[in-house]
Amino acid sequence: MPKKKKESFDYFDQFKELSGVCVEASELLVSALEGWENAEALLPAMEKMHAIENKGDEINHAVYHQAAKDFVTPIEREDLLAMAHNLDDVVDYIEDVLVSFYIYDAKFLAPGTQEFAQLINKSCIMLNKAMDDFRNFKKSKKFRERIMEVNDCEEEGDRLYLKVIRDLHTTDTENPMRVLVWSRIFEKMEKCCDACEHVADTMSTVILRNS
Image 1 (cartoon, rainbow, N blue to C red):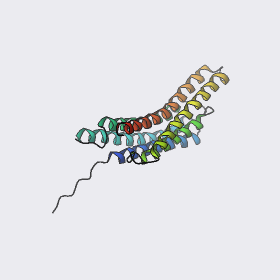
Image 2: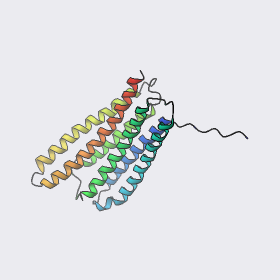
Image 3: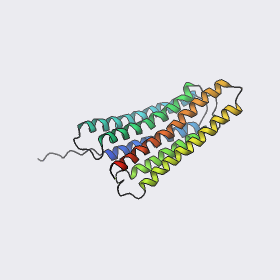
Image 4: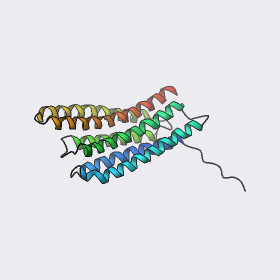
């Protein structure tokens, strides 16, 4: 009886799955804040987010393990590892945002919080769409456009961050601790958009190295 042929490991499928995990995490963040009650009510969402984060870790570890074994890889080994690591960072940073509301015992949502969560979700969706064409980046006519859409989200995040931080320091000056806490939370939210752009930059590096 002939031996069953072992299925080959597809890095691009793994990246697509990992970018999907990013979307899943960002959607959970949005839904948790839309249903806001208080910080303690976030505990069930935090458990779900941790499970999502673990899923991302498993994919990341699988890529690292396979890259260590493969003699030939579809793109540079360091690019494969950077992609997996940077995608995993996105999920980690989103989890960090959700946890921050709990550890700082947020009593309310500052203006701009839900808008920022929606932007993080949009960034992850754009990144996931870009990943559809990553496998065929040499031929795809939409790939560069989708990379730019991720970059546009990051620039939108920069503008929103400036706005919400200025609002904190001009309208809530009598509550320095509250300003400090929300400055930290918004910094973490802006970091999520930066992380999505970092993945897009890694894909752009792959294009340059393989052109």
